[in-house]
Length: 601
Image (cartoon, rainbow, N blue to C red; front, side, top):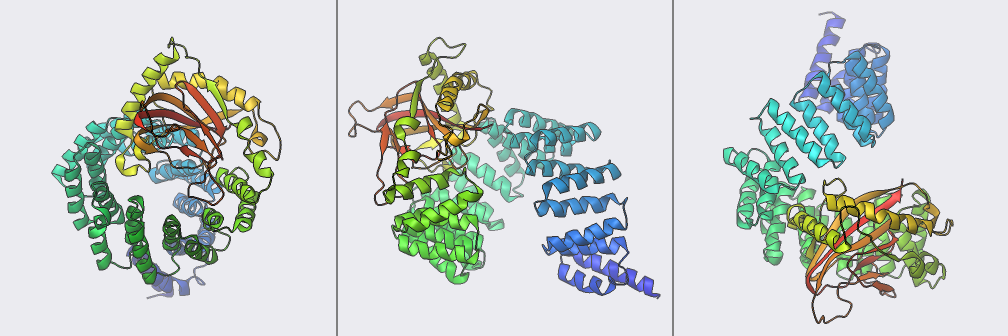
């Protein structure tokens, strides 16, 4: 055998090892050959694939660029380089490389798919849609229509996504994946009953994937068939003991009232696989959601003995300890996360609330200001800064939290097609109650005795909602016009004539329901509009159901409610997104509201 034949055989052996998932072995075989094959494009490309499999992306990029330099017309090499660049977050360069690959291989479907998904990653949704439609024109089929549906779903154009899912299904009506995708599209347009029937048919044929089990179980639970949902998950976890399935099962059992015993099956699975961190986290999350804080701490303590210094476990541990009003202990865990990942924004951000509760005010203020240097419009950081100034007795707190100037109420005029605001509210109430039935899944709720819609309603084709958004625009313009364009005023500093609405959702509270205190991290101006108020005739609390401002999510010494606002039908309240806001527990049968965020456009 000649040296060239021997080298070729070793390259083949290396590729086979990589295909079997042994990237280390593949590198061991190929590395000694690279000096003699340094101009051999296929060998360089193979080493790039090996490095990518080991998540050594910088090295993978270097080898792939070298391969391309020696094979300028090899489209597949460009595509694989694009994948690496995309994984590194170099989206614009990846898009350029994918386009080059497409020129060289116009028929390659993988290149088209990669290009569309990369455009989605970078937020160029209109261009992603255009490319997906070009794919359909070139190769009409289920893959292309499904890809377009994914783009439309990301754009929250759910009716169009449903049409694309239906078009894909026409090409292969018996294909299970397409049927499952169509069922999901039906759910997202508010037709969960139809979607559930498809899920049930698929399960009856065969239960062949965990995603189907989870979606069908969620649909059954939402439809009221809660025991059937639990039974399905109990069956599914026997074949796929994943954190997602076990977590959903534990959540269902908690909502049924089992208390801390609800996580029994999950704990049994943890005993079999103690090294699976996702199982520990799912167990702690379910207990946290169910307010079983003491057991959640026990679980996380055991998990940390298995995997000390695991950031996700330490963070969860810190949060639950804080819930138990143990801020000093919580800080130990959260500080450890920050030590393990120096400079990590999320780790530093997670410290802030607990620092305030632990009276480490100056430290919280400094961290918040440092983080705002890179992201000055992060509403949570502004809220933390304002709260710290309040605790320090600094008068600048009043600049940030000038409730008299920055909380404004408007009476909404009825839009075209509605004679009175009462007509508008009646139509809105009908539309929103339907959305709460079909679009507010009980497993996802954090509101006590209430629900919040789980998707933006902006793209919903409903005349009342469209009319409402047109009617509030005058109030939004007036509010913006009254802001002071001052660098010391984080809401006024962003004043602009160009703005857009970012999200529209509804909250519905029943008796004893309340909305926890929070801010809208990526907002600018937030809102509340009151559609239906059916309060108790003689409430125990005169302010039951009122909007409240100034109180952080967890009790913080020296930070009580600073202002309240009485809800009134047809009234729109506008205020900065960084204001802590929540509700006083409601008394009555229904408090139905709409909210949206405004951001500079």
